[in-house]
Image: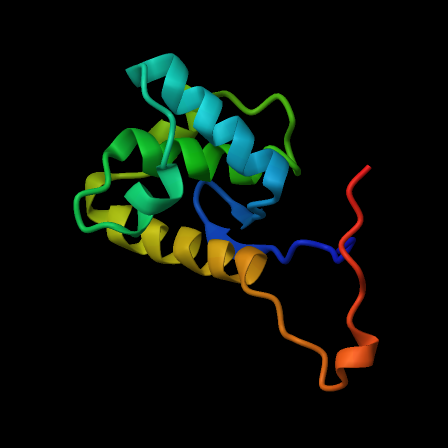
Length: 117
């Protein structure tokens, strides 16, 4: 716990870095809920072959907010063309894997306890 979430570089309107922290995932889920009325399961949707564009853009937008907190959702949607969606999904999947899959310490005694406040 407490490890920095890794950023994944992406070039959109300029060079940027996608960071899918827990806050970013929650923000994306809330945005999808605002737009579609359903926000649950966005990680599963993202990993599926039939991922809605709303989920892709919401995750990308939320993953960019760490570097530009006032970034508008619509601006992010305009940064991506339909032929780039597959590449964007690849970056988002990599960002999720970097966040969700952590390397285990070689020595189990080195493992840090989970702390929930």
